[in-house]
Amino acid sequence: MPQKEFYAIVGNGETVALIHPLGSVDWLCVPRFDNFPVFAAALDPCRGGRLRLVFGEPLAPGGHRYRERTNVLETRLIGAGVTTVITDFMPWQQRCLVRLVTLQNSSGARQSISVRLEAEPVRTAAHAFFSAPHPAGWHIHDGLGHLIIGGVGLDGGSLTARCELEPGEERTIRIVLGYGTSCAEAEQSLAAGCAASVEECVSFWRDWLRRARPLDIGEPRLEEAYYRSLLTLKLLTYEKNGAIIAAPTASLPATPGGEDNWDYRYCWLRDGYFTAVAFDKAGFHEEARRFYDFAFALQSDEGNWRQPLYTLDGKNPFEMVVDDLAGPGGERPARMGNLAGAQLQLDNEGSMLHGLWFHYCCTGDRDYLIHRWDGVRRAAMWLTANWFRPEHGIWEFRERVSQWTYGKAVTYGGLMAAAHIARELGQPHVAEVWQATAQQVLVQVLAESWSERRQAFLRHYGDDAVLDVSTLALAFYGLIDARDERMRRTVELIDRNPGCLVRGGVARWECAPMPFYLATFWLARYYFIVGNSARGRLLLETCLNSMTSLGLMAEHFDPETGEQWGNFPQAFSHEELVRTAWALKEQEHANGACESGYFRPRWYADAG
Image (cartoon, rainbow, N blue to C red):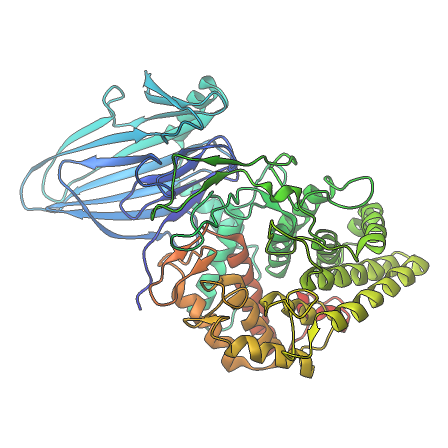
């Protein structure tokens, strides 16, 4: 099956734009990822609004691609005698989207070519945008963010460009979307965009990617997916403070006709930790460290994190239902904001502790451990006093709390990491306390999550629980050997259960409607750990075959059609591709050796 064309993404460390294969801007929030979207046709094609180019005659998509290993996009459109290439880029840390529209007369006769911009913001009673002419072109604002659309080679009053081209001749028009928190700021951004160099943007991305640890496994397709995932994860990083968002969109439906339409434009501690581990694996230690700086600044005096997710300035997002917007298939409700911020998810603290120790294992930065010691101590003490509490769990079910296997496994991993940090910093007595508590967690979760009836570990305690791929955390965090008979039986049951294995991909739990990239990568990573490369590679290939033509992934996917479902692109999916690629390399090419050169105990080795 050929890979399906879908949206592309460009960004500047503050927001992103989603670009349709026909060249329209179908998602943009200003001035930040988590502001109300100005353009949201990616969610609602009817009322969402977009910025589109209207040509004298309809053009057909001719494919889009990134300039090699950058986040500079080229979209090709083809018409009768006219070839158009739109080059989209957002200079890093500059508040503008630049669109270079190159028109070429590919006919044998002189042609008159016209291009008109249509800018229609989202239409909803929930949030008002105001549009008006501006001396430079067009001004859209909601009082919080201001967007001015103008450019070079464009008539500002009509947002139209006209040119006469001889055969083979081409002309480039520069369209700029400048934004800010005021009209004056947006005007300054517009001016900066009019002067911005695409070659400088290309150089920025190539210089950044040179810091990556090369995968070097002789498999070009996987290596390209690895680098594309790293470039995508950088776009999901808020450069101002290091926060990492789960995805840049809101309410894109997770399943056809479904109600699981959530806003992911926030920093989940779990997602951020997963991504920080991927950054550390790939050699981007500064990005990982800045995430931990952001996260530890939000730690409470008691030692826990009171929310599983935060806005980009560390607050709790409220949630609203936008009644007059719907998904592409009429999916409702459309939500902005996320009430999961009020949930208890016990993997928060364990993730932070585990990630910090992994960062040390990769960098050897003892000074950073010392700097974070007080936060480590408080988090470990909080876990010691609270590890037994029921919670909402990794999948954030709103209607109930349970004793989740995943949360207990990460708690164990976090306490063990804290114990190793304590020993490294000369605190053996507290290390013994935390390790003893970790042992209590281990004994309980292995006993209570095991079902004799089903001969498998289940999602939470009790025989009414279901099979769930998150139970792989028991092996990943070292509570049980990955080759233990109980773990092997659990995986066999997941891998042959038609409710878990859906069209070749892996669902999160049995009877879930669609495959989930994260779950499929997790099972592949498990197989690489135990040495079953054939099965691991098959699952990895399923993901590679299902990603878009640009190498991007949503949350859910359909392996038969290549359709992406859920918010897009998803950090979960891309960070796990990075980690799974390294799992393959470590098992097949490096015999499982720790790539960092620093000691990691056996219990820890598989969680990276």
